[in-house]
Length: 212
Image 1: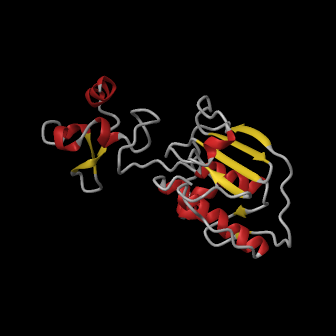
Image 2: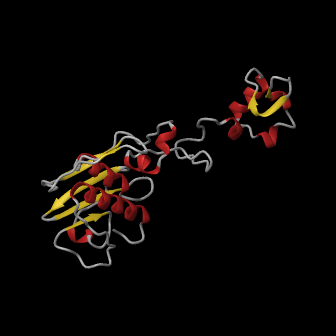
Image 3: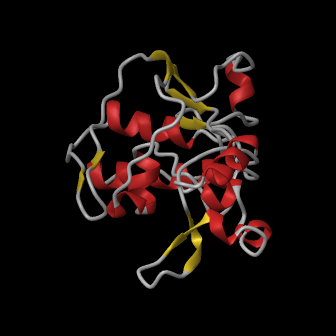
């Protein structure tokens, strides 16, 4: 792996872990400053990958290239984090038979020998964005393995558009509007205006919301 790509390195460590669990064989993870080996798994674009002469420049977003060349396996992806992590987990699922069902349930086959036939696959995910609103899916391994893109509401990640769920405060910030237009905000059970919920019956609020 490229020693500067921490996402590729972490994915390589997880793949190595799966191989150990499946077969008991330890495949060490090394960066691309090490000498090329006659048998190796290359993850992402790095110095070892250039020797395979595989053109990844036109790879589609969120695509996965899996190729074998002799005794070398090449895994390349270009997910949102500029890494091949999604491709590595796709390979583990499709070709190794691994599955992560929840934060504490994984299915790992047990084999004496892992056999990989010749592969020349260029896979593009039918989904640009995948998410599941269930607490257990926020487990880091479950998220990574199932290629889930959790919306980072706290960081205001607006890649998927300016409006997302729970957008009231984003469109009409309470710091800007609550004191000037308290009537735009909802009443609580005691008849008091509250800054964290809009009054959806107020037409002037609606007009300002649409304008913004």
